[in-house]
Image (cartoon, rainbow, N blue to C red; front, side, top):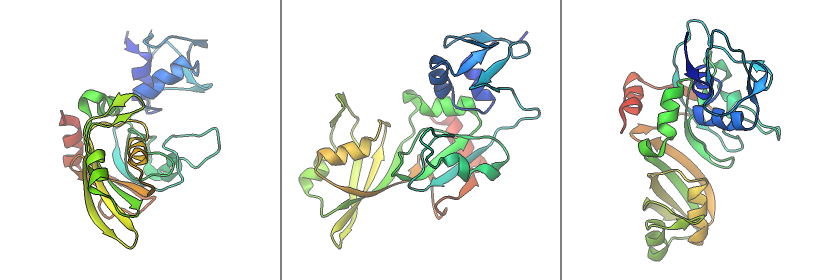
Length: 240
C-alpha cells in the first residue's frame, strides 16, 4: 500500500505545484473521498479518491516529466485559470501535450521567461527560499537614473517591513528620455522590483525577465515556448 502526502500526490499528477496544492487544500478545494482534509494528510492513491473542485485527480499512465520555458507576454496571469476571466499562461502551452504549471510567477504587467513543468519535486525545490536561483531582469524606467537612485536600488531596502537582500543593479543604456536597468534578484518577493523602483521614485514602463540563473530567454518570441535542453534541466536539478 503506497502512502503519500496529499499535496505531493497532487503535484505529481501535474495539476499544480506542491505549494499551490497546500493553499487549495486549506481553501477546501481539494477533497479526499468527498471530504475536506488538512494539509499533510497521507493518502493511498490506489484506494483514496482525490478531487480538485469536483474533478478527479489521478496519475497519468506512462506519464513523463516535461520542462519548458515560456516567454510570457504582458496581460497574462501566471495561473492555470482565473476567476476574473483574464488571459492565463495555460492558454499559451495547450499544444505541449502534457499539463504543465508555472514555477514561480510574473505579475500581470510583466513579461519574459517563465519555466513550466509537471515535475512537482523540481518546482517545489526551485520555489523554496533555500534554493532560490538568481533571476535577471531588464527594467525600463522613465527619465534618467541618478547615482543616488542606483545606490538605493543596490542596497538592503525594506519592502513591506522585510529587509531584502542586495540586488545587483546597473544601467545598460540611457537615451531619449528613458533608462534601461539590469537587475539581478537573489530572492523573489511579491512585485519586488516594482516596489523598489517606487521607493526610488522611478516609473517603470516595462519589466522583462531575461534569465533564470544561466538559462537565458534569448530570441524566443513573446507568447512562444520551447523545451529546456538536457543541460538546462540538469542545471536546475543540481542547483544549490
